Amino acid sequence: MIPVEQFLRPRLAGALPGAEAQRRFAPTPVLEGWAPDLRPDHARRAAALILLYPGPHGVTVPLTVRRSDLPHHPGQISLPGGAIDPGETPEAAALRETHEELGLDPAGIRLVGPLSTLWVIVSNFVVHPFVAVMDQPPTFSPAADEVAELLEVPLDVLLDRTTLRWGRQALRGRDVDYPHFRCTVTPCGARLR
Image (tube, rainbow, N blue to C red; front, top):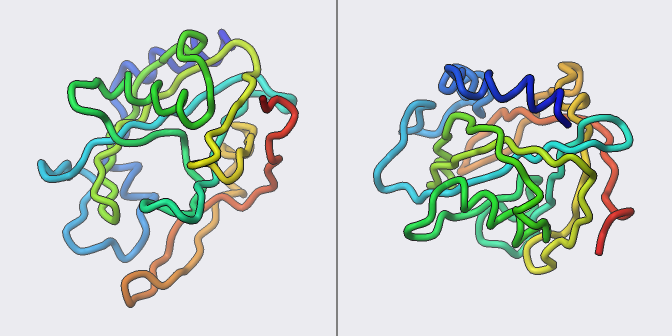
């Protein structure tokens, strides 16, 4: 994992594209009151982890399919993450949530750096995303009360521009165009505890 970490660490320590990138990937039309550079004081805080590790098809990212009975973003594909507890740092929250959702020991995870925060207006969370690495493929133990399915996606698939598509869905009484990746992913099953 060293080459990926060496590539990312200085880039994440520098200026990030932030609002510019978020504007390009925002659903349209945007919800009234949302802008990519807003971080409202009334919003709750959350953290998420983009975990990179060696997989059978190169550098891989785990994603969860959220249970359909969860109050926020039910049934959606997501990164491991969740609300930041009082007194907790965003970094600690990202590692704690990854442990709670995927059963991974934070001691085996190296944080590489933060990405730009993002206000998710529909759930009123300002999300603090972090990139981290593991040197070996992890053995997962997904939390059954949160995770319906665990997916492993090669990073190359997410970087392939041909997999990025736009779809349309009704949201709050109007049609919204949203970005998504159209790709085949493998449900994780080989390294589950």
